[in-house]
Structure formats: structure tokens, C-alpha cells
Image (cartoon, rainbow, N blue to C red; front, top):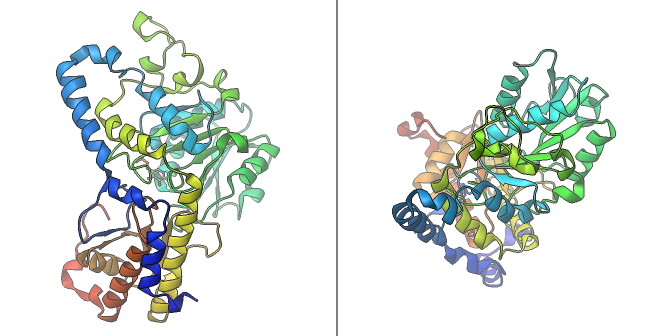
Length: 414
Ligand SMILES: *Cc1c(COP(=O)(O)O)cnc(C)c1O
């Protein structure tokens, strides 16, 4: 039992960790235990040099010629190919561009058009709200379509599905609880009813192996600034299975998705293949840190990432339950392996506890109304960090640190 876990034993696990060397390739402030890598990944050291290179050489010296000589025009496609192995995608199916919200919008329209005569979009009531907001915005422009929300209109996916369903939008890992959905099984269920699935991989890419091609997936979207460490606002990705590309049309038909953007023709004709999911000028500077990080990810064994993620989250849950359970801290995340790489806890004073932990150098985040989230990025966290985080929480809870008056004010971003 982990109630008897000792820090010396954890230090030994860290010493034997096959991923240990990656920690040195990140900039991490001293005396901080960073448990928010599921929201904004830490800075890979290699990113600095890449950013400097893009700014100084490609922009400064190369000027407009860099659209060709530095490959700026092809960034969405080229960086998409760097990312593709992390989501089990064969070449030619992934673009890195725009944001997750925008890519969801594009994928949704394309998927709806592939299922004419079906009017229902199934989504999860507990989805990350931007997904629901984008669906609402998209359906607001179309007559007749409506949503059916799992958790509000239907208890689960199986009962939400019927022959009216055009598209299902699902999160692979729940942003709040960390619960992991079986991607292959849910895809199979939806396909059995003739529906298409759009997967939101924001909380799974870089946290566990994802195998879209093997699952027969249709569409997927996700962001790169969480576990992939692409930097604040780094561009998102969109996956479109090759079999859908020829027929797929997306609504944000900007010039970079055109068959021949530099013909400056009057009418829109989509590019062949995945390129039709581009919209417009890539945010070149935002690709730089992501490229550096993805270069590092090429050396990473995702099986080792998954094993360490389960070990760190499991250790955290064990320690929290044994040390803080009696003080009213409840583990929300599933205890079996159906979980991603973050852990959600609940307590009456969650917000104040998160603030008190930050003042003790342990960074987590708060999700309204009462959830604390702690992300465990396997590339740069150690077993000892888990121990130290729980020790800090024990002290904060024992001293009712949430009572400090300054914690009554909440900043814009929690
Ligand atoms: C982080 C996250 C997003 C973010 O969307 P943006 O368009 O990048 O702001 C979307 N969906 C989920 C599930 C997320 O976790």
C-alpha cells in the first residue's frame, strides 16, 4: 500500500525512469512543481533557439523570400506530418493550423455535408464549453439541425445514437474529470449507426498513445500548447481520414485552402487532399516553438509516457486518498486505467486550496464550480514532485490556508 510509500523509494523510481533525461531539456523555474502542463506545457529549451532562428534569420534576413526558402507557406502541412505519428495518422491526413475551436467548426461542417438527410449532432453536456459553443454557432447557420447532449438528453453514447445522427463530437479525455473514453469502441458504435465522429484530442495528445487510423476514425482536432509544449497560442491540428478528403468541404474557404492560391482566381476551388482544410496565412512565429518541441517528441516512446503517466497519477491519487481523504478531499478521476494524465479532486474550498498551493510553489488549476486539477506531464515530472505536491496540500489543508482574505479575489484566468 502506498500509505507506506517513502520518498527514498520514489527517488529510486526517478533514478530508474527511462524518460528522466527529458526533464533537463525543459526550462522549469526552481522550486516550482508544475502541475499545469495539461493547460500550458513547459518551455522546451530547444524552442528558444528555434524562435530566435525564425525571427533573426528567416524573417530578419530572409524577409518575404522566406515564404519559399524557409518553407513558411507549407508549415501547416509539414508540421502536421511531424505531429501525425503522435496520433497514429499515416501521412497526408493532418494539418497544423488555426485553433482547436476553428478546426472543430471546419470539421463539423464537412462532416455534416457528408451525411445529408441526418439532422442530429450528438455531443457531451460535460464537454469543454468551446466545443459546445462552436457546435451551437455552426448549427445556428443551418436549418433543421439540432443537438442531442449525452448527460442531458440521453444517458450515454449508445442511447444517443440512431439513424438521425449525422455527427458525434467526443472528447477522448474529459477536461474536468480526466476520464478516458475508448476511442476505437466509440468510433465503432457511431459507425454502426452510419454517423461520423469528430474526436477532440486536446487532453490526450502527448499524454498517451492515440491510434486514429487503426480505430477507423473520421475526424479529429486538438491543441498543441498542452502536453505537446508548443507554447502559448501555438496552432492546433486537424485530422481528416484520407477516405473522406475528396468529398469533404469546409466552410472557411480562404485562399490558402484553394487549389491554386497564387492564380488569384475569382471562384473557390478546394485544394486536393488535406490542404483544403487550410484557411489563410499561417501564424509563422507561433509554429517555431512547436517545431522544436515536436522534434523532441520524435525521440519519445509513447508507451513509456503512458506507463509513467499512470504511475504518477496513480501515486498522486493514492497519497491524496490516504493523507487527505479524511479532510474531505475527494478523488474524482477514475481509479482504473480509464483516465488521461491529469487528476481532478473536489473539496468545498478547492479554489482557496489551489491558491494556497501556488503560494507554496505547487501549481495546479481550478475549474468551476469546485474542481482542482493537477496535470502530470511525464516528460518533465518526477515521482518526488508528486510527493512534494501532496505534502504541500496536506499542510495547506491542515492549516485551513484557504481562509486567507486575498484568495477571495479571482483573476481572469483560473
Ligand atoms: C484546451 C481545449 C480547447 C481549447 O480550444 P482553443 O480553440 O485552443 O481555445 C478545446 N477543447 C478542449 C477539450 C480543450 O481541452
